[in-house]
Each structure stands twice: as C-alpha cells, then as structure tokens.
Amino acid sequence: MKALLAALLLTTTAAPAMAQTAAAPAPAAPRIPPKLIVAISVDQFSADLFAQYRNRFSDGMARLAGGVVFPAGYQSHAATETCPGHSTILTGMRPAHTGIVANTWLDQSAVRPDKLVYCAEDETAPGSDHEKYTPSDIHLKVPTLGDMMKRADPRTRVVSVAGKDRAAIMMGGHDTDQIWFWGGKSFISLAGRQEPAVVTRANTAVAALLAAPQEALPLPGYCKGLSQPIAVGEQTLGTGRFERAAGDAKAFRASPALDGAVFALAAGLIQDMKLGQGPATDLIAIGASATDYVGHSRGTQGAEMCIQMEQFDQTIGGFLAFLDQQGVDYEVMLTADHGAHDMTERQVQRAMPMESHLDPASMAKTVGAAIGRDLGIAGPVLLGPEGDVYIADSVPRARRAQVLAEAKRRYLAMPQVAAALTRDEIAATPMATTPPENWTLLERARASFDPQRSGDLTVLLKPRVTSIIAPAPYYVETHGSPWDYDRRVPILFWRKGMTAFEQPLSVETVDIAPTLAATIGLKVSGLDGRCLDLDAGAGDTCAR
Image (cartoon, rainbow, N blue to C red):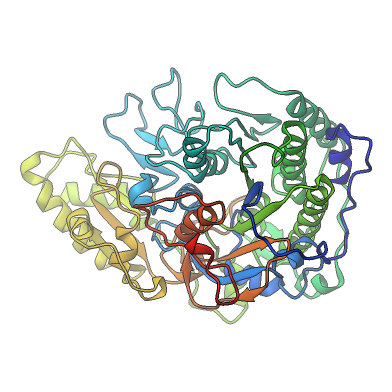
C-alpha cells in the first residue's frame, strides 16, 4: 500500500508508513458533526475472527478497537451472503426491505436461458448473464445514507470504492459522485462513468504491481502455530504465504494486496476530491474484499488468514495515518457483511467430527426430478440456487400446492436440513423485535424475504453443515447460513476525542446508518435499525 499511495498521491509529502504505532492524535472532544464519514466493510470479518486477532492488532485496527466497540453486531437475517449483508450497512434496512435477498436469485420471467439474476447487474442489458453482466444499482430498493445525505444537502460528496462491485454499489447507493470497484485486472465503474486522473494513476500502479511476481509475505511469530498443512480435496493448504506468479490476477485478488490497492485508491480520491474539506459532510464507503477471498480459498484458521489479518491491520494503519495528514475531522465505522465458518476438513481435525459437506441429493433440481417422477409431472419441477427453492413456472397451477407440500416433506426428512419454510409461512411472520440472538429460524428467514424475489421454499441447513458439496480451488469454505458464526460481526466507531467504551450486548448492522446520521444531525425515519448512543456518559449522541 505504501508504494501505491506514493504513486497515487499528488503531494510531495512522503506517503505514510504502513507500520505506525497505535497511538491516535491528541484527543479533542467532538462537538460538531464530522466533515468526513469513512464507512468500512471488511468482507467475511466475523465476530469470531475479530475476537481471535484483537489482542494481536497493533496498528490501525488497534486504534479503531480503542473507540466504541460493539463486538456482537448482527447481520440478523438468514441469507448471510455478501450482497444482502452490504445492503444493510448504510441503508438501515434489512434485506426484506432492501430487496437484496441473496447474491443471486431466480427470475423466471427474465429473457435469458439461465433465469438467474445477480444482485448488482442490469439483466436487461444486451448479452448480459449473471456471470458476465453490466453492473448496476437497479435492484437496491431503498436509499443509502449517502443518498439521504445528498437529498438533505446536495453539496455532499459520496464516494464508494471496493474490491467487489456488489460491495461498492450496495454501500454507495444510487447517487454516488464516484464509484469504483475491482474488475479483475483494473478498477472499473458503472456504465457511462468517466475515469478521473486518480483512477488512471491507480490502475497504472496496480498493473505494474500485478505484472511483477509476489514473494512470500512475512510470517508473524504468532502465526507460526497456525501454519499447519491440511489436505482439502486435491489441495494442501494452511501454510501459504501469498507467493504469486507475475500476472496472476486471481491470486492477487485473494491476497492482502487487493485491500492495499482499494485503500490506496480511496486515499487518492479523498485527496483529489478534497473530501471532508467542503461545506457539507462527505462520505466514503470502502469495501475491503480480500478477507473474503482469502477465507473462501484458504479457510479462516491457517497461516494465510493470520497473515491477512496482520497485513490488514497495517493497511488500516497506513490509511488512518494518511487521513491524519489531511487534517480532516473524520469519523470511522468498521463492520462486516457476514461471518464465516472454517473449512470442513480442518474443523473435523480440530474437535468437530460432526462437520459435513452438503449431500448433493438436496439440490433443488435433484429433489424436483424425484417429485416429478413420483407425481407424474414433466420437469423441471424445482429450480433455484442454494437456499431458495422455486417451483418451476411450467408446473400446472393446480399441482403447485401438491408439489410444494411434497418438497417440504422431502427436505424435512433430510438429516442435514434444519428447516424448510414456505413463502406463506415466512410472509405471515411479523418482523422480530427481540434481540437478534433469540430470533427463531422463521424470524431470521423473514428478515431476508422479498415476495418478488425469494423462493417458494426456503431451505436452511443444520449447524456445521457447509453448503459446499466438494471443495475446489478458491472455494474450500463459505458462509450463508442462519447460524451465529455467519451472522455475528463486529461494529466499531472511532473519532478523534471519542471516549472509548464497549457494549457486549447484541446490536444489528441496520443500526449503523441511523447512528451515523445522528452524528451529523441528519433526521431519518422509518428504518429497521435504531440509533446507537456513542456517548460513554450521560450524554446522548442520538438526541441531537
């Protein structure tokens, strides 16, 4: 990141070092709204991962952990995937209201062969499919905090940068001044956006970095005990140090270097646009995606994730040091879109022999084929990506109730299935009002349900069953379950002069938007979340 910052920044001031001390600037009690809100989402940064490395952080993450900490934040819904999770962070709304029920859902009316729709695409674009698509914000049904800020004061600038398009779009919203995300080999944007000079500089610098091989990254002393080989399918993982051949873009993406590039670009945009120096409060949303790619490809409990955590701590430190040099009054919020669960193979070795991979017999097409055969209905009968099961439009209307009942019966008979909930059962369930750790599976599913996009049947797996049928390169662990290891995430707030405190009781990620809105005096209403009081004493930051 240090080298990238030097290439991007226009000033002659030396780029901040990556290994700064954790000490924050001299405190000065916040009395006025911050000039810049920095909202960071660390993809797949579970509350468990935060707890595991909290006493190892010595740089940027140590500073943020010295602010106001909610270690038991919840992505409270059942569909704990990247797109739904990011849609909650700056909207204050659950996926049932954002409309982002999954990364991908089925739309049988779509004019395309596979009928699958990606959450951040415009499926009406010519030649688009759910893998090769035109990025778009059209599926997000509600405004983000940035949208609300611009409505209140058009002078507000909103910027969103991320390692994934879905992170940038769901956090940035509908009215961004700049929105950039990693496109595989360079940073790209929505259709029609012009590339500013800082993005050109960033892409040039990252291309040079990508063209060179990456030597093994240092292994911190506290990571050595985790550096143990584990056989996963045909791979041996657990001891990697992110060595990379020149030009290997996929390995670059699944490494700490991706986060370095994202934060360097964010710093460049802050400098070039003079964010935080205008007449209104500005907002920059930053999606750090490398932790998710590292987790999916190498798991959460090996040397690879340990190195990723150490490198991310330094990246955050370098970024905060840059902000300090700008002299901007900024407020930081950091959270995650979901948690994760380590790979089955390592869990089995480490005292969890009940861990298992999903039985392929539970796939919707397989179950549907059996139902069609037994009931004499021509296929296809059931369709859908994991979790959501749809009755095919080709099934006669008079037979649909019978098919749904039979599908529910068959799924509930499967030993790996915890619940099979029909759309009517979910729709009839009120939104939960109790602490999120106490929600029933039906209430968790309700928070993810959109009648226009969700399936006819929601199938939830039992704890410690991974939805991965067979591990493959870059896909050995995952998330998406309704269980707390996937739902729980940290929520951190930091601002110069803030009195630190920790609240261990549960809160939700939908509480973030109203909390940040209160710090700038922005009135919001009708959200699923509530404002969290960030004053450690008798004062109340929600009462402005």
